[in-house]
Image (cartoon, rainbow, N blue to C red; front, top):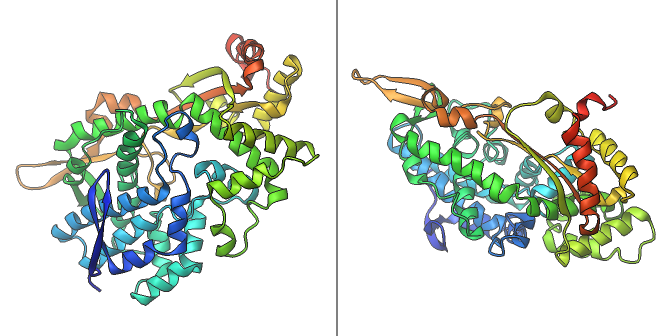
Amino acid sequence: MAIGKRVGEIRDPIHGYIFITDIEKELIDSRPMQRLRRLKQLAGAHLSYPGAEHSRFVHSLGVMHLAGILANRLMQMGYITESEVQKARIAGLLHDVGHGPFSHMYEEVLDKHCKMTHEDITQWLIKESEIKDILDKYGYSAEELSKLSIGRLEKTSKPFMNQIIASQFDVDIMDFLVRDSYFTGVEYGKVDIYRLIDSVDVINNALVMDVAASYALEAFIIARYEMFKAVYFHRTVRGAEIMVIRAMDYANDKLGLTKFKVPDDYLQLDDSSVLLRLLSLKDEKEKKLNVAYNLANMFNDRQLFKCAYEMIIHRRDEFFTSILSREEIRNQIAKEMSEKTGVDPDYLVIDVPTVPSVPYYPMQRRQADIPIFHKQPDGSKTVQSLSEISHLVDTLKGYMDVIRVYTTSQYREKVREIADETFGRQPYSTRVSY
């Protein structure tokens, strides 16, 4: 199979014209892909950055485009075929098709109630929806592409294909950094992504980066770090998001938000439909449903939770990463704080979002450094880690733990005092009951 016939183009504000093939057009026009137009890329970020109204759909087009550019480079170097370029583009296009309403916010509810991620849903939709029919029509395996789309195609002679979509410097991250930076209006995500792509090679069946591009790699790492601080983990953004998470969690049984049986059930879930369902709970008498309505209504009117306390940790801490990351421990601490302040525990939240500063490759299931290579005079190439030659990356490598306590505006100062007492004056790890 060769790459599909080019049938049109789409104008994108980030990458210019994105040319599409016949199979890509059919996939783009499918219901699972069109649904992504109704999912905001950044969930609640538009309430802090008004320009952040872009969708998962346009991001998916960008990932497809960049996957094609990187795959074309690998083809020109003799590593893959033209058909594999098309596979990489399809994988990029479909990589987010399983995202739920409010993107990663829904995923927290999905994980709690179903022990699933959006990647599980992505595989399911590719294999069970009309996407499979389109792939079959053009001679592609839905099973293979369902795994490649999330970077977990294991039985392959070219494992580096996974890394196009999911690696330490994958095209997914490249697109969302520059795209999210553009639409939020912040400057931190501007990265020379084409310099990075032009510096990729394959050594030992893995993608590696030319050391000559180390300055662009450093900028890439810094951009990701700064975007997490300024946008993704922005205190007001997270304040909005945890309200939606709690509302969906509390209303899940009533609204059946995670009780889908067939693709059509899931495809009806998007940002607007779920928000309307939550707002329909206005006259419910049950406490949790009433709270779910209140939180959704507050979110809709931008009456957001306020951050009463914040602590940022840049080094791994056994207590904060293994204890506070457990919901039951957070709820225990929140309950104690509620009793001391008189604040309804449903309106007091301890939030601990965590992410590796250097993203990991899913098949490794652990954090990994970025491999780079040096060209030797004899033409050979030696590989080492970026952090070995960059003190900056070595410093940033690791985790950024953000611990925050949220409540409504009227109780902010009261909760702040108790939070200072709880987290600041005496380590809670000395008093928490295991």
